[in-house]
Every structure is written in structure tokens, then in C-alpha cells.
Length: 529
Ligand SMILES: Cc1cc2nc3c(=O)[nH]c(=O)nc-3n(C[C@H](O)[C@H](O)[C@H](O)COP(=O)(O)OP(=O)(O)OC[C@H]3O[C@@H](n4cnc5c(N)ncnc54)[C@H](O)[C@@H]3O)c2cc1C
Image (cartoon, rainbow, N blue to C red; front, side, top):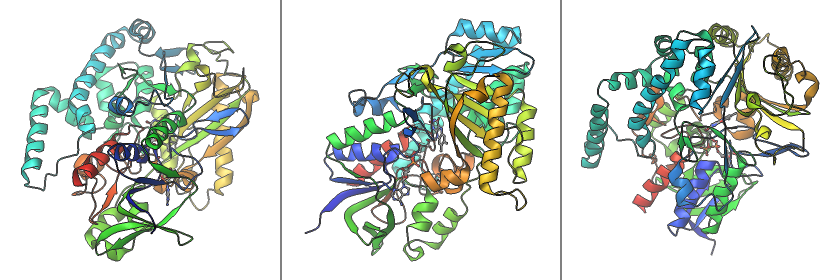
């Protein structure tokens, strides 16, 4: 008799692994099927060149939920964080620079160089965000209530949400602005220095095909001040050994609890009989049976590629078809012979300027101009660059004395104009331009580049299975959050097909290495079991 699993999880993204670990911990017989030869999805470490271990997609962590670290004993399974202080360094064309981070005195001193008023305002701005975070953060690990359901449990959850909002008092208006508004008006209200605003504004656009003047960007800004690193709120860090260090720890915990993980195994079809998911099929015809199937893939891949339309209600298919995957993110991963020696803060051994995120974005108009080209389907002439050098804190990811750098850049449109040239030409031109920009601030940079890899949105789709190259498995605008994620009426990790669930970033609370989607999905699945 072939094995019938309790649960089959499609995709060993970190969320799929979290779901697997919790279900296995509850005694289920779990099988995880992953297309690539390694686990982790967008949270992986790949040795791109001998000795250079690169977090090829996601590169910094703060959002990962502390309750999961505790429950799954991830530290025992090898997970370790390296907090960053300072957390950011912005060199400016006029030869000045700005360091910011968890060291409040240092940050005050640094911001004062540009504006004493802003140095006073910054802690108050952060305190405001923290009060709003106190309201929003607990909702990350809750299943969103369904406002269209009159079920008593739902009404109670809505009431609780309302009471939480009431507690915010006048900060409630600020919470709504953060959830719906543009980042610029908020930054203009709080700060006067363009250098401070530009440094914070780059956080507002990460992964969004938008500029800080556009509605919806304030939430992305907020997303990037949430979370914690080793118990310290708002601090981002590197995972020792690269982002794969986290995924491998979750996989190890899942396996210890009995979950089976098969890599190099692509699911080509979700088998549905009498409106119930009964297993999955691979391209070679192999079938695996299960009482339930759980997808860690985005909604488009799950429902439109792996399923027959006849197995889904037409209006549901229509909602999935209308999902927004706009993206302009491009990752350039590099191997370096030495760290960049910045003219404004010299040093060719790792110093404070190398430990955090290096923002290359002198002012917010620079962002608008970069976006202008991309909206007409051309790569930006001068991309916004957020560069990180994890080897400045982690001696396990590069050969001694050498370094790895991640450049998270925008904007590289998913669809190029007909006269824009080939994808490969654009990738080369774009990466070379990124290297030139860094060299303008650190003259040794170009000659320090030993090798590089470019991941355009098309590559993110091809390698990681992200529709449109959207790094969050779907945009994070208000109309795609909470009870509307992935589509209205199905935010409880269930789908129109019995026994078919979702557990990846396409669900609430969305993209980021949080583990919350997988954690919430496991809770709902166990509730049905
Ligand atoms: C370039 C980039 C940079 C980012 N930077 C950060 C960051 O610094 N910090 C942060 O918190 N977040 C970041 N993010 C977002 C974050 O990485 C993702 O939101 C998160 O990792 C998604 O995890 P997941 O488990 O939900 O899904 P995924 O990681 O998307 O996993 C899905 C898995 O399914 C597999 N798969 C696909 N199709 C099939 C199939 N047919 N059969 C079997 N398996 C299949 C894929 O190979 C993949 O392993 C970044 C994302 C990208 C792409």
C-alpha cells in the first residue's frame, strides 16, 4: 500500500518548513516537496563561488517571530543572529555621511550633523511607530477575522480588533495613515533634513514598484521597523551563515519531529477528487497521496498553474487572476577582494560604515527619477542601492580577508520595452551601473569586484517561482493585506477546495522572513484536524 501522508507541503520556503515542523510536532506524518536542490525558498545561502556563501535573495532578518524560535528551539538547531550596529550608513555626494542605528547617542550625534531638530524628532517618531506596532504586531500571528462572516468567533475577533484600535486613541489616525498613505507626507511632517528623509525613505519602497510619494508606501516603511533581533525591538541583523542558516535550522527541527523533506522534486499538479485535495502529482507521473495539501507557493502558481480551473469556483479564479505582482526589484550579489573604502569615511578593513545597510540614494527626487524610467519599462539609469556586507560581521561566509556584498536595487521592470534590448544586455548594463555608482563613493570598489550575479525580476520568477518577480508573493498594498490576502474571503489559510490550504507569504501577514504565515496556517490546519 502506498503511504498516505497526513499533510503534503508544496515548497520548502521558510514558511512551508515552519508549517511542516508544527504539524510534525503535533504528530502528523508530513512530507515536504521542494523543486530546488536546497530548502529555504527566498531564505537561502548559496555558495556561488568557492568560499563565498551568499544570501542570494533575502539578506537581513528582524521579522522572524520569536515564538517560533522558542517553540522549535531553533537556536539548538544552529540558528544564530548577528545584530547590526550601526544599522545604516548613507554617504552623500557632498562628502558628508550619516550613520544611524540602535545606539541612540551615536544616532543623535549623527543626525545633529544635518539637523538638530531632526535629532530631537527621531526618537519621538520611532516611539509613535512603536505605539502603532503595539497594535499591529499581535495581529501578525492571528488569523484575520472575516468581515463578511456573522459567525460568533469572527464577530468576537472583529470586536477585539476594534477595541485594540480604540486603545490607540489619537494614534489611531496615524495608524490608518501608515496603512494607507504615502511615506513622503509623514517624513515631511517629522523631519526637515533631506538626507535623513532620503535614508528613511528607501525603507518605504523595498520590494514595491512605487515611490515614497505614492499611497501604500508608508506601510512598507513601517514593515521595516517591526520585528526584533535577539529580543531588541526594531534591530535588523544577519543570520550567521547567511539566510539559509535560518531555513536549515527550521528544516532540522521539522525533521527531528519526523517530517520528510524531498528536494529536487517539482510538483506539477494538485490532485482534487470530489472537491477535496487528495495529493499531488509530479511531472514524471509519480503521485503522493495525503489527507491534505498545503501550498507555500503564491496564489497564481497554486491555483492557475497547478490546478484545473474546473476544480475552483469561477469568481475565485477571477480574484486570483486580478492579483497585483508589480515589481521592480533586482538583486546584484557580489564577491569582493576587500571592503569599499569610502572617501567620506575611509577604511579598507570592516568598520561601522560596512556593518549596516549602505544606502546609495542621496535624495528622494533620485528615487522619483529612477522610477520614471522603469514605469516606461526601461531600467533605471541610476538605481537606488541598498548594499550589505554580511562578511563584515560573519566570518563564515567569505574566505579570510574577502567579502560578500548583497545589493538590493530598484528599479528593474519585469517587462522591458520592445526597444530596450535583450534581458541579458540590460542585466549587464544595470549591474555595471550599480558598480559605477558604488565606485563614485568608494574609488577602490570596481577593482575589488571578483565576480557578480544579477537576479532581475524575471530571474526571481524563474529561480524562486515568484510570479512577476514580486519579492512578497504579491504586493503589500492595503487592498492585499489582512482579510484580503491572498483574496477576500480566504484569509484563513483555507481555500475553496476541502483539504487544500495556503501557508506562504501570499497569505496574511505577507512577505518577509517572518514565519508568521506558516505558523498561522499550521494552527488553522490543526484546528480542522
Ligand atoms: C530578492 C529578495 C530579497 C528579499 N529580502 C528580504 C529581506 O532581506 N528580509 C526579509 O525579511 N524578507 C526579504 N524578502 C522577502 C522574503 O524573502 C519572502 O517573503 C519569504 O522568504 C517568502 O517565504 P515563503 O516560505 O512564504 O515562500 P518562498 O520563499 O517563496 O518559498 C516557496 C518555495 O516553493 C518552491 N516551489 C515553487 N514551485 C514549486 C513546485 N511546483 N514544486 C515544489 N516546490 C516549488 C520554491 O522553490 C520555494 O522554495 C526578500 C525576497 C526576495 C526575493
